[in-house]
Image 1 (tube, rainbow, N blue to C red):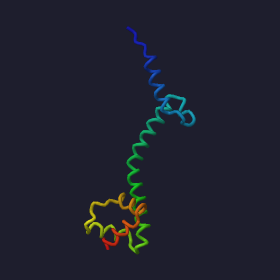
Image 2 (image 1 turned 30 degrees about the vertical axis):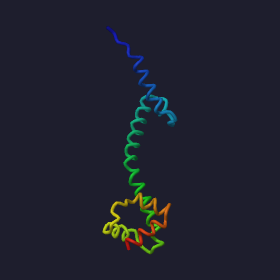
Image 3 (image 1 turned 120 degrees about the horizontal axis):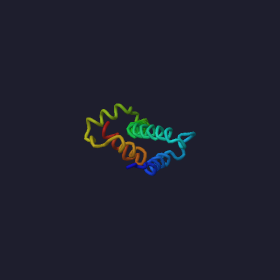
Image 4 (image 1 turned 135 degrees about the vertical axis):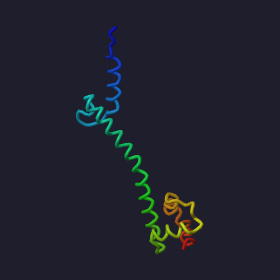
Length: 114
């Protein structure tokens, strides 16, 4: 018995072309180009999800370092002394938030670490 695959193929093609809506050139019109574009897009999004964490960490370090200039302290010294002190639970995200939103609390932490 002959099997007609037109419906399922059409459904798959519509799905791919739906994912490539807004892409430039033939990447949103031709199924072969659209498939390649979707594969590349997925690859890039996976890679950049991993990269995002290091980007945020860099931002937090810059925020902390900028606030530490008020206390005549370098970032590396601060982190070293922080590790030796009782404030081991404070990560860079928390420190950056404190430096930005509550500088007086951050100042107390810096003075305790000194």
